[in-house]
Image (cartoon, rainbow, N blue to C red; front, top):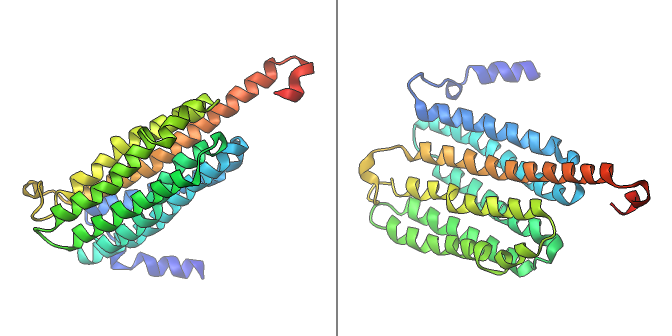
Length: 259
């Protein structure tokens, strides 16, 4: 039966990407990049210290949701050559709050409050919801909705860099947690700047004169940020594991029980 499904899939028109269709190719590459990253993070979950496992699991789920969604978006794009806006925002409204939750998860052992998590989630949902209204409102309205959407983004940035989480991170006794928190903070400043560029390329918006397909921007942005978030967590978790192993190896036998 599985072979039959593969043969049926092989003859579907949306499985064929024309050689000159760069956008269709990026949908294809993004699908496999996200699904491969999801498999990697979930399979590596048990190789990191326990305190990092939830964060790595969340990273895998984020990439899994996005990868499955990209599979459908690729098909929609190749059939209609229109931007799969609704599917893209369904992805974001699920995954962006989870990306933001990583900051809370990193500091949960340091005493992060649930109120900080709610600020991140509400800010992320606000940003995505009003961004979607800007995408579907047509020329002339997207700038207004984009400005309103930015308020949610600023709430996330403030909480991470200047709010309670930004102040709490310095109290962590783990250098890996501090590094991971700061690296992810740079992602939301630099990496997330990709999305406003794509948004402003809509008809009637500030960069619409570039005549550049915004799907290219969004596709690369999703892979860079979602996979990047996960690899930051994974690399810092592995660093923490190596440091702990080295400490255990160097400790005298009488101190092994306390390492």
